[in-house]
Amino acid sequence: MQPLTYGQLIRGNRDFRNLLAGQFVSELGSWFNFIAVLGLVRVMSDASPIAAGIIFVCRLAPLALLAPIAGGLADRFSRRQIMLWTDLARAAVALLPLLVVSRDDLWIAYIATVLLSAFSSFFDGAKNAATPNLTGKDGLLAGMALMFSTRFLLMAVGSALGGWAAAVFGYEISFIINAISFLVSAYTVWLIPEDAVREAATAERKPETTFIGEIREGLVYTVKNHFALTILLLNVIWATGGGAINIVFERMGGVYFAEKDAWNPDMAVGLLWTAAGLGLFLGMMLAHRASIYFDRKGTNRQFIGWALIVHGVLFAVGGLMPAFWLLLFFTFISRAIIGVEYAVQETMFQRSLPDYIRGRISTLDRGAELTMYGLTTYLASLAVYAISPQTLTVISGLLAGSAGVVWFLRTRPSSGGPEVEMLTASAPPVRP
Image (cartoon, rainbow, N blue to C red; front, side):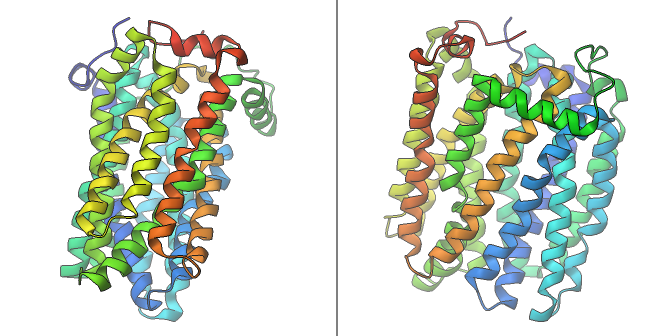
């Protein structure tokens, strides 16, 4: 089956188009909010690394801790209703940082960040479970690439615009834009029919299974399925280095180059996220052609492993660069490589999961990754008291790149199993 192109999927699938449009708007608002909250905390805390670390933990911990629950709800209840109501809740919570006027009020920013992330975990769980239903198997590669590429494009555009808006108009306008964006997203979700986000037949699911039983079922599936466990381990190992990127960008852009070359801190941090977002967007856009090529050559396994290793090494090299624009360049290239890799990897993963359990498995994987991501973010905020931001960047890149070694070990032919055969099949991998 020939995968649909991006244009074919967007033109021929109104429901997916609505979901994509809603994500586009809400992600733009979220990046306005992200840069504004970072700047607000930096100003109110006198650029404390610990305060920055706390805001990242508040952002990541709820996503990690609630992911298994969110996946269970997405498999058990209406995915459309979950997305709709969490968007409305996020619209209200997005306005809370407007109440922060002094250092003593920073707890409000922390609470607002926790609540936004908590509601986002349920939204993303339902969205990720629903996307393969909306795209169908022939449109899944294009759909996954578009969902992630627009997210990363908005990382680039939203962080740049957010940094500019924060520098010119102040942080308040960013919080208002974020709230409005969630209302727009809720409207686009409302346009999607209920039956479009779930398979009509879900015979594999046992009706008598309790909610806790379903969560346990997802855990057992992941542990026993070689490919699912491989993806989980791969993402967790990557996060040991990937989590530090939050502090890397904050310290390299907002402190080091701001002092060294007189960059505006908000603009510098925004530009680093812009370089990362543009790189990831480019990588996702190249993923469709790349996936067809690697499928034809039977080199998916080699590509994923080497892409992970090379992207980490390039990011580490960026930490040694003396000029800000060189750091931007190496950040862009490393993210472009990992963008292609992630689109290919995630499409293979989603194709391997049956609909009745997809929400639980994908959110369990995401939750494990984010747990490590949040932990390493906080550890990185402590590490900058002892090491330079440049050293932290090098360590971050090398740790993230080590995921490629784990991939090669887990998918070597001697490990056996149909999952390895899937990687070398000439046709797009689809498991029954």
